[in-house]
Length: 515
Image 1 (tube, rainbow, N blue to C red):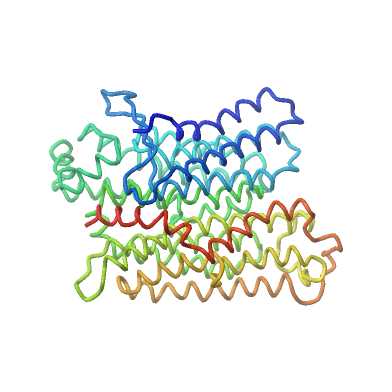
Image 2: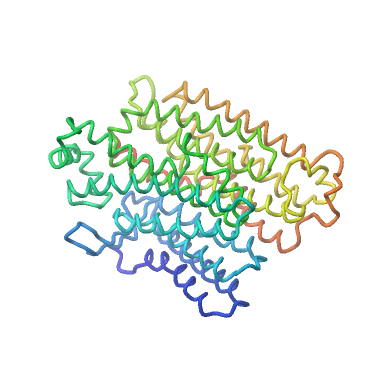
């Protein structure tokens, strides 16, 4: 038990910052919001400094009764997975705020919504009791909806409504499943439910309380609840075929909102698979591992071909985001498969899951930066983002092309940059566990290389188009905004052990719970 509520303070600092924006002058709104987000970033660094990577248990634990009669506690804690997500969220939000610095339409409300969203992210990645975890989960949805609806592009209303409805349907399905679980067990705590699942008692308790009627067997009942929780996370990632809301939402959202949606919010779904679905429904996930693996493969391949077919650069990056998160799903569903003794399954599963955790961070970093650079292109080009309106950009904007090129190659998985390590570990682990699914997924790698190299060729090279002016390059302030992300791509690509030291003990603990 932690005597100092550092996680609580970290979680609510952005919310306090959002409240302050209601009283500070409009001219100080940006500085106040950025100060709150940087303070949260400093607290996240303090959490990292106090984190013990060798300890496989939850750390910085805070626990207290809230509504005892309903089994509801205020229960916070993090392991390596939670720490990485906190650090990622703490980095993405100030990055997005700096990208949104020139917003003139009601900046106080815009930055307040970003801070509210950050509180939702921190709460989601630290809460260990479903009741208040779900509050934070939904808290992130509301500001994201208004950020798209009020500041988005011409089709923002449709995109915002589609985003809201898809996410809400998934959330309602998950909520109903957990209400049923609580009704049968009296428990909302994730760790306690995982212990019941490992012992086999969870299914028995569910059937004893809720069985009968249309649920003739324990297996049928638990499978229905499993699908309810699965739907909530599958929509959030998103997994094919629940992905159709994402391209419109990411494309119509303002640049900084797209950065947050892909950089941090999309990780909520992957986090939920690892933190909640696998520990509480291990048998159901294992029983359906093969079809789920092929849904992951479809997510990788279909989104890669969809990205290749786009002409709007922002939509290319949006579909690319789905593609890269598909690798996370591939690794997650591969580690639950039963294996024979012909391979070193524990080692391969550890490699795959470590790769998933690294891919979450690496994708958040590169996709966030890519949306930033696309926003710069759009702003310079009078709002146009179609690939045909660019050409020969390296002649007039060498720094922009250099930074964006590094980010594109990181997304491609070039060795030496951050994107390589996570994908390599995922495929290194998945090939022995599910060779067929891994082999087909490499088609996604190939198509990704084709559309990224095509994008570089069409935008950076060739004759200079008439729409590209002499003042297209990054300004000094824009270079400083992008530089931390570029530096991290090299640091995590050359020294991945910085992150692996955090993830590996957590990975081994998660795998131990699945056996």
